[in-house]
Image (cartoon, rainbow, N blue to C red):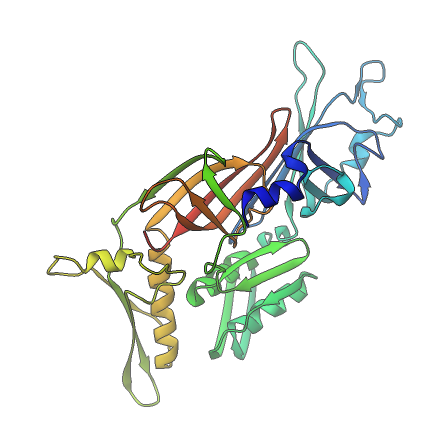
Length: 366
């Protein structure tokens, strides 16, 4: 989508707005608790984090943090309280929810001069996945079956793409749920994250056009890309052993198997096939039981490496559309950097300086 169209839908980006709701009540508009700034950090394969600052609530006479309604503020901002954050432009009631989560941190500072403020932070609904270590076993199940069961255990909806291979046994051995899901995602070349009340587990959405087109000097404030061949490989071979037939299993992935390739662009594996006589290969021994599983593991390992070939950090005007597992088109950067990029992290911040979005990208081709 062109930036001009996004601008029309966002009131010309003139009035940045946000709302912080705790236990379904708006802090500023219903509870009269002023919030000076809010920040939301969303990232793949990890719990998202939010923070906001509460100001002008300390009562000197009562020596307490009190809302405009006379309610103790720390009773509202209690640990574990449900939080909903909306960010965008214009009418607050029309803003999209960018994160739901729970409060896990509250801090303050009593300065020599001035009044103390409250710093409040927490994580999205993926936070319970990070707590505690579990051991589970699944028999004759796919990786997506295991992820779906964990999502139900944590009362999360699941947008879970089916993985093809059934395994005789899948084991979670004293791991946090988030580390275990990350391991399953990596071996299938899937991405996972929690957005609102839904756990997403699927192949990356790294094909097609970007959700928004930004040009340097027109919405894109800064961009720092870096292409690096160090550590890249021309292909991956995965070896296993078929205990029934007593035969070697070999899976292979080569240049061309990377996901998210753009026509006419070259991946690291393509570039390594130049004048070199000895091509760098990654060879792995893993517990695979079929040729199809070995090939899938090889493609996953190749993609994991390839997505580190071209990386970058950018800052733009505030755009709630820029989210992990989406793509953005960045132009006016010259060849070969003008292209569509896959977003792995986005940070949305609204304060007295307005609304800006910082984001990190990763790509397989240049």
